[in-house]
Length: 553
Image (cartoon, rainbow, N blue to C red; front, side, top):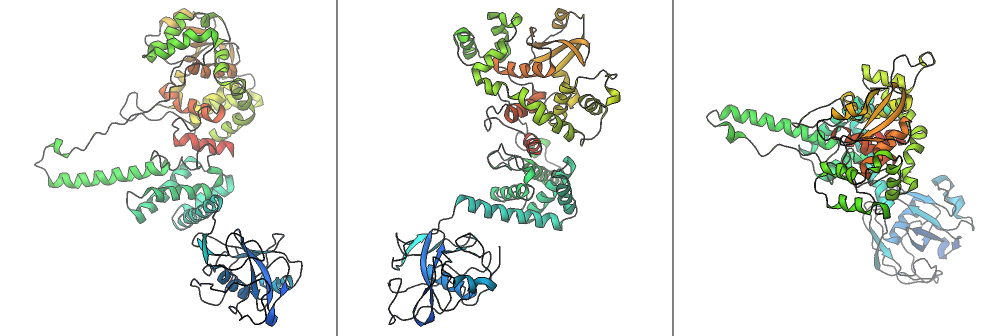
């Protein structure tokens, strides 16, 4: 925006001009001695003044210009329209959209072919002005003192809020220790490493509490979150409503900023309790306890299959079953063909969502996600398990023989996603925090060729969520995949690892069973980001939205 300095009062003026036609008689008294910007041709009025057409928002008027001067023109135009004087962000455009500067203004307005001159500016603090009535855009309409609301488009308002939030975050990071490194890393990589993201969140949360206390209003937290994705657009999540919900979601009070603020609040509360405890030694422990502290983890339960002639009985059973643990086993006992007829899971999933949705994983994973996931995982802290998966997913030429007996490239890339969106800590619940390598055992189990499938099923002592049983000579040479569900082995259609995982994911929907807790984040990412199923209807951890933003930009 170009700042235009003008003389004259900055307060609102009341343009109480008498009604007149576009060509007033010479006897009419002159108007405010300021200059006005015009369009649609230049007309000479009495006493050497020019008559120009000016447009602000959707209202257009004739304006008298005593002399071709940009500063005077703006003062006169704002006076004519009843708009308070604006000193910043003002732009004057001709009919072609070209901006006019002071040095060319006189030459342009003297050209009869100039056209309508449009004035634009930040409307954040200016909401109304005098209007000539319903025929404002007509050159022959007379002046009136009716007041209308200056239309501010949602896009303009959003842009203004984005700019304010962007400058706020940029100013904080530029002044706080470590903030410049955040900006430099993003400018270099168009992304933020996990440690850098944590540093940025800590800086912004500290600034927020310094200015607003430990419980900032929702609008403040939303402004900081908006500022992050405005300053760093590649962190914007295209699948969420505003793009910044993984930093702060006002509806659920969650996100990285919200979590950091809650941590600060807990630390302050513990400090207060410690101080109170030192002065209340005679009180019992129960009297110092607060309310309940247990936290619940909500899980998404997929919808049962769509009704179809051959599946109506299964649908009825799924609808009336109240125990999810016995639901899938009941289905398999009533419809044993799932155990020996390949392709029924795929068939039922297509009935639920259609062929386009059904084919998205096999279409998108190799072309859009696999290489990006490998690239992102190279930035994670190094571990033996992670390095083995990276080597398997992207083998070098001298390792082409697979001497490490790792998984094949496709399946290794799926397991890398598990490291990228790892299991969420369960707090006080068992089993507590679990690593991605531990969670892998709930996704796939490898057995050597020749192993009895029945013996493996007999070792299962409790009901489990669906997982893959891979049978082969080694992990990257699998001859058969099975989906294990409630001590039942369902053969997969293909011996391809990618197709078998695709079928495993779909089995959750076909049999109406929830995701395993340790695999919830990974499955939810695949469900919403790749299959685009129930976007916005399931609860996503901020980590899911953060990784999605990295991969889709």
